[in-house]
Length: 470
Ligand code: TMP
Ligand code: ZN
Image (cartoon, rainbow, N blue to C red):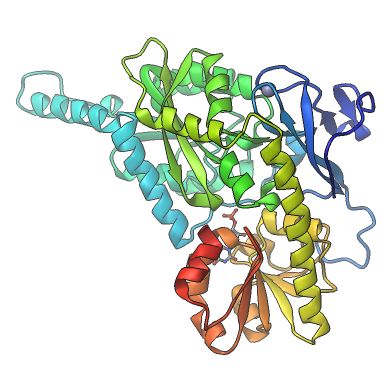
């Protein structure tokens, strides 16, 4: 892994490099500037979600450059090479987690949108119209008068299902056909498409404009951010609200979450950069909330410039925090790169020492960031026996690049290791609480970020929490 500034003049031109599958990013996708700070390079690595069938040789495994840089103009942290989205997303194996903490979070998103994006007001109007209709005072409220939620990147529809249960109309838009089929089978109407002006217009044609356009953990995956916001402009009602949830750049930097940097994640956002992006399309950020999901994220609410929405104090408060954190300067990024070099080295050393002592080590979870973490630390099947994961699609495969086999939690229980490297660290609280038998039997966890921490049965609960969530 390298970092720091690259000599000017050594860059390829914007456009296609490497066999037509990768595009070099010469200008910023948000502001068009070309003043980049090279922050970190992870070399050329396989796609973090590119799980493989076990084989004798992995010689043909495709790799793509993984470099991250800062746009000094608008503060976007971006990959410097984008892999063709069709390779990344047409058959997507990432299925929204049905873990307890994610279910709780999705419930919270509904509540947040209910209160902060005007759905309460909208639902109230519909209810009143309905009551008036029953009293014979006015036309009875039909379903078209219930608020409409449109979610892009809706995956298998878990989030929309919660809105539906609150009586709202919902439509999902997601490019992965395999996931769209599952969503529709579950009764959550979902269109197989990228969210862009044409597909947004089709949704509006069929259902009317949206009171809420939602994108949870989706923006980072979308290369053409302006086309995305144009689609929002097509879909959004005049008083509608856009709500996007993205991993928060400040958390990524402060908590050393280097393993969330992989090819699927083209962009890493601060609030300031999102304000700038939306402003170019007549949308103004009116509210923001920090949430703990995926190691620290923000839910950003935006409304049309001409709408009646006013800006809440939360926006200025967070922008101020970003200013004080120096997010518009090189310093926090260069310090982050230094810490990442140290932390990856420490994780590798810790695991190799345990293995050298005859301890059996395995991975807990096989998330995309687990692939990224193992590759960044140079760990693989020589060190880890297996990774256990709850996703059936992943069982019987090997992780990309590191080629560690993936098995089910049931299989893992029969061959429990001495130590689990907690690759799904964003669920640390939930997992460590659930695995008390493993801990009671002398098992330990390594929580890799923000600082590699070994957790055993004797570790105090608050220390575990601090390790997981600090
Ligand atoms: P995510 O962080 O992108 O939601 O992915 C979480 C991954 O971790 C997913 O592959 C499922 C896996 N996982 C487990 O194997 N066990 C668990 O207890 C949890 C919460 C997740
Ligand atoms: Zn920029």
